[in-house]
Image (spheres, rainbow, N blue to C red):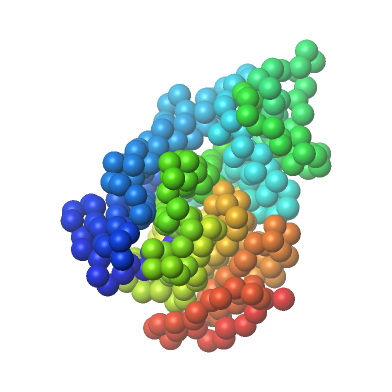
Length: 369
């Protein structure tokens, strides 16, 4: 996950901290949502940061598949019946479908059937049986969501968007307007999981909340999803470190990136997983195989205008691999940094990446073509 590289003169006070830089005070607050630590640092009063962090609870209740009554829970338990969702969920579903098509299925929110087979926190982990994996693959292949913007289902039961189907070539245009309610209908057995995109969206929305209250300098880090608002109070870009795979969290970075008014999102095959019979199994699954992605990438960082898109792209590229990654990122004018299992670091031309070469992890730093 990206690390916020803190200033050396920062004085911590419990979960809150503050540092005075010139006449501007940089306050920091932390919270635990979405099974990860979330950090907001901003030139703003602490009560405003607390209000911003409090939004995370609302979004968790709305988007978690484990919270009974959430939009995602209702879709997963509807058994083919229509479910009305608001603009937040509709926007995420639209972006997810866009990236699913662009990545040829490497990213697919209908992956829930596969996610349910793996417990990466178990004290005694096990591998899914072949029959379980085959059943999950078939279930995902048959999964389909239909969306009708405007909160109404057509008289014939039709809808304007098909999510999870190759038939939907016009999803981007059809879902431009998600301000109102949207009707979602999932085929029975569909289980959606927004774990590869929701945190990015939430980070964007919390950043928008801060901007709407006049905040001009802030950095948000929601478990690897970083959004930079403006510049650092010292008048330079924020400095975002990329965590060394396998190192203790927040202790080592292999590279750093300057960030201002952009999102920097990292997907890593090192964050969660287990070893069994000499092989490591990580938590990022390929929805086409229902197995951990095996394309040789340890870390993928995407730099984009918004964290929702960057979040989905980072996951898609880690699953797709180094060869497909550059073209997929370029399609959205996004920057890309990849680190593979051999320690080779590559990046999009134009990114001001500083390779730190800690723990001899980097062998070659070369622009992506």
